[in-house]
Length: 402
Image 1 (cartoon, one colour):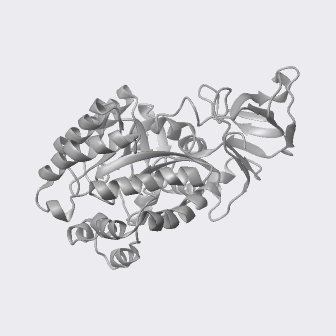
Image 2 (image 1 turned 180 degrees about the vertical axis):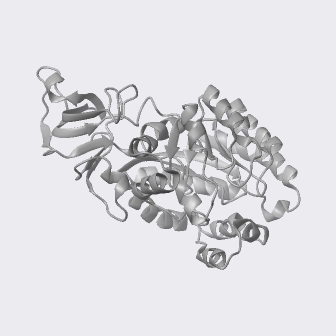
């Protein structure tokens, strides 16, 4: 079998569903043709005549699927270091938001920034992720809160995919907060999002999905339903920020509407988790935000495990509650703060993250037919990826076979 590239003498963590543990292979081979995996498995079982003009000896290094960051707010103007200082003195996230800070503060900086400004500030954040083996990233809007500026964020996200070798999916999060123009009129803003913004975003092909912040300082479940039903009517996938600060039953609504994921979930109850399991809606846990805002209520890991809901992990990279650009640190946080296992952490940034993006048929595991997105690591065992803090053992990053 003729291929473009072969990696041999590798130890593999295939992360393939149905295989025990991480799907480890001690003496493994990965072969690719036209950017897709044609074989990933034991050398002794490789197809006869497997050959390629480019063969890499991995010298016993580990290969995992390329990592996937399935929840970020990577494109934004400014930063909120001053709010970090406020929180250190005891001011809560909700108090800051209600005083005109929070999302609206970043909105002002984002509206004032040009597309070139936003691109220049986002590239270093994206590069930090890529340097740790990330090959796919989701980027949300949500800091423009007006069609012109939401579209600007999404165009920059699309441009990032042209400037770097990475797969980027975009999510319209216009229903992130009520902008000043609609102060005291959340229903009026939701009407604007549904009647004007979503149709325009869909028409221009700027977003792959639509998200909504369902929370006491965000939008009610009734308002969230309007947004997500409108998104579905325009052929867009849906997802939801749910149960981060309180339980408004947003995760149940997300499941009812067939959402790809419900994210945060610290306050989710058993009914919500059961509904997510029935719907196939993934849970996206965000330990960076949990850590940064000093949350004390843990997400319901026991319920998620009991109902076998896929558990993804992501950075939630954003200027206010998770200024984090390291999926390796996310895994450590998930293990230490949430008591997740090494296997759960690695599944969370590969196979489960692919599910949360609706891309499990293309990425997230080392299997024939999937895109050849690899991370090659200088480690002795996979646990090192979740064990270390502030150390990057990446040897090489492969995206679509290159």
